[in-house]
Length: 153
Image (cartoon, rainbow, N blue to C red):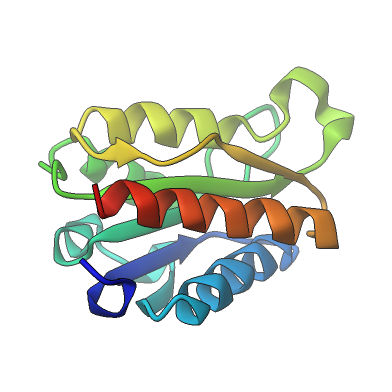
């Protein structure tokens, strides 16, 4: 399937704006590949919407001692009940390496939850320290390429 016929949703949660910057990079990379993209904030989004897309990228932040974003808890819980076996997803998020072992833990939690839906992960989890750099942009572009390759298999 050509990328021009594919659809994607990029769902983000942010406090500082860093994760929205990550989401914007993903949207730009997808659009550059000809993918039709919808970007939405997690509290304004229903997980069921993912059934309507070929690709999804979730960009949650990790709060406090490794907690999920409060505004994303319902979204997270509702994910487990879905069959997303036709979905390819990627996970990326900004964090602060200051938190050591708690750095970007929300990505791992969302990955486990998405695995329960039978969705297919593309690439590794992308952990970004604070605001995305040019190198992070390259890594996010690679994640988009991996997702496109996986959905076209």
